[in-house]
Amino acid sequence: MKLPVIAPGESGALCFEQLTEARLDEVQELCDRCVGKNLYPRAYLASVIHKPDHYFYLLVTPERKAVAYIYFFLTGLAEMAALARLPRERLAVISPKENPVIGNLQSVGVAEAHRHRHLSVKLVRFYLERLQNKADTAFGVFWKTGGYVPMEKALKASGFLYLADAHRVWYGRRDLICPFCRGRCRCDAAIYYKPVRRRP
Image 1: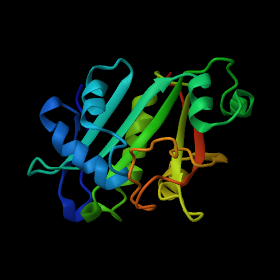
Image 2: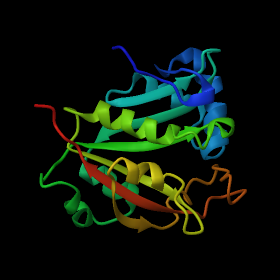
Image 3: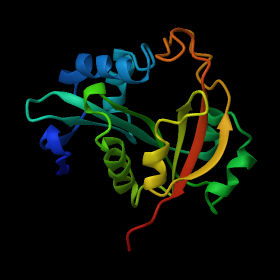
């Protein structure tokens, strides 16, 4: 499958690549910096490579350095209700189908030196393109702290709708070192969704 190339100004052309075993250490370090240490250990990242319906892509510079990533997978309504800590009935609004296929946008990360260049928007739109003819609804539980959702602008620019907040979603991950809390994560989350257009 041919993957797109994007050119975000000063960064030069960035290429999408799928995660491979050769990049596990580099990507684990990137994840630790972007979303918190231990949220995605090396062993977990290695398992994603071979999991059906799991997709982990990197944005790579001409110098072959990974500077951003996006991770999503296909799942069902019950699994998303558990992740969002909401009753399944509360999620009925996201799709008219009783058992929709959901494309869960699990994680997005951009290295600090490459932020404020609209890479998050490009990553989200890449994800939506990949979901066509695979999922009925795009969905995500996104980090929120102090009333601020870092992904909000990218989500709204891509047509996502706000559904609800979820409280202390990652608090149960005792090993996670939150970059904001500087320890166990007490942050909340905001839930967004978008119906996926099927190609004719």
